[in-house]
Length: 370
Image (cartoon, rainbow, N blue to C red; front, side):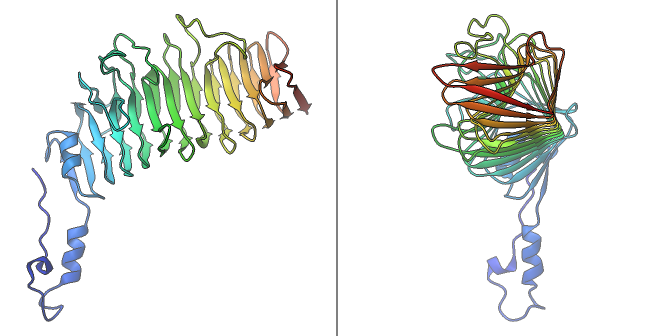
C-alpha cells in the first residue's frame, strides 16, 4: 500500500493571515520527512517501492528471495534483513540497461544510493547472443553507490557465457564517456565470471575497504580493476583466487605476449593499495603507469609474481611476499621503468626474488633498499 503524501494548507490556498491559524513550517517539514517503504508489506516488489519512493526515502526489505531486476534513478537507501536473509536474484530474462548491457541492479541518472544488509545474486540464463548477465550491480550515468554489509555472488551465466565485459560483480563507470563512483565496505564478492569490481574511465572512483573478493574456481577472473583512468583505494581487504583457468589459451607467464590475471589491477597514478591480504592469485598486484601507492600488503602463493610493476616509476614499501616464481617483476614494455623496493620482504620464491623484463629497447631497473 502506498504511503500518501501530506497535503499542506499552502497548496490548498488557505493560509492567508497568521502562523497560528496555519502552521506552514511544521506542516511543510512533515511533508518533507523521509518515508519508510516496506517490501513486501507496502509494495510486493522492490522495483515498485523504488518507483513509488520520493528522493530521500528509505526502503526496507523483509527476508526473502526477490527474483527481479531493479533499476534506480533517484536518491534512496535500501536495507535488507541481512545478506543471508534478503536476496535480489536475477530473473530468467534481463532487460538491457542504459549501456546496452544487462544487470541485476542498475543505478543511474546521477542517483546516490545506499544498499546494505542484502545479497545480489545470479546466476543468469542468457548467452552472448541473447541476454548474457553483464553485471551484478551496475553504476553509471554519474551515479554513486554505497554498498555495505552485503554480498554479490554467483555473477555468471549457466552455462558460463564468456562474453566481452560480461559478468562483473560490481561494474562502475563507462566508455567512451560516463562515470560512476562507489564506496564498498564490509562486503563479500564471490563467484563472478569476469571481475569482482571494475572501475572504468577517468572521473570514476571507488573506495574498497574490509571487503572479501574471491574469484571463480573454474573460470579465469580478475579481482579488482581500476582501468582507463579510474582511480581509487583498496585497503584492509582480502582478494584471492584470481588466475587463468582452462580453457584460456591466451594466458601465460610472458608479460609481452600473454595474459596474466591478477588480484588487483591499476593503471592510473593516485590509486592506493595498502594493508590487504592477497592470496592465491596468478599475479597478486599488477600496476601500470607509475605513482601508484603500494604498501604493507601481505601477498602469498601467487602462481607467477607477487607484484608486477610495468611502464613507469614505482616505490613499494613494507610489503610481505611469500611464494610464487618471482616476488616482484619490473617490466619495461613501452617506457623505461624503475622500481624502488623499500623494506619489501620476499621469501620462498622458486626463482629470483626480483626479476626485470625488458622489451623493444626499453630498460627495467630495480633498487632494493633494506
